[in-house]
Length: 207
Image 1: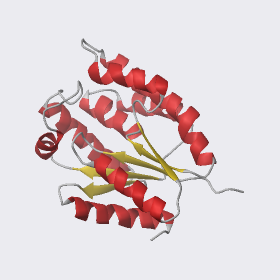
Image 2: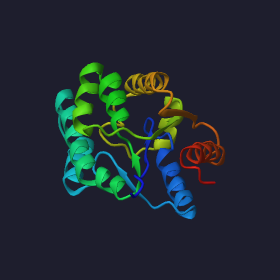
Image 3: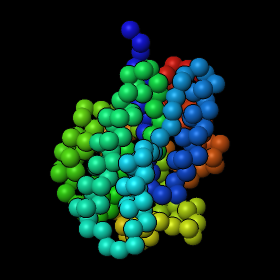
Image 4: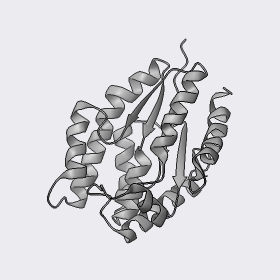
């Protein structure tokens, strides 16, 4: 029987450097003979790309519950039509944002109902849980410096929003220590990558 692929998610507030590290992990896995694909939430698929456009660039008010359900709709489609089929084929999936983003941003950041969001996330993923989540932690000030000036609708939410979101991520890491691994992303890219690589080796045994 073919071995299921690994499901690895990359999390953190905007500007934390997770996307750069995802690319590094992809290269490392491929060099070590592990077939993998990269994807993102929201917006990895054709339907998702239209949802992403609304979420990040809609020029008007988006109600908090509307925002939440758009993210969840994108996730449900993504999991069933892309992530699960890839994993079943033995392909490792590297995903830029997943369920923890919704809890951190729409839950803690928007002062939403955490328990309700967790329950809705469970429906959207239909039993799928990442094998490993890499959480890149930086201060809000450093994250905003890195993000630059070309900001989307969510990135313009303000400092207090991102402080709450960061706090949410840290709470998730504290409550899920076996899955979520906290990484100090304020260090150099090389140091961060060394920390990431060590965790990838622990998971896959490759290295």
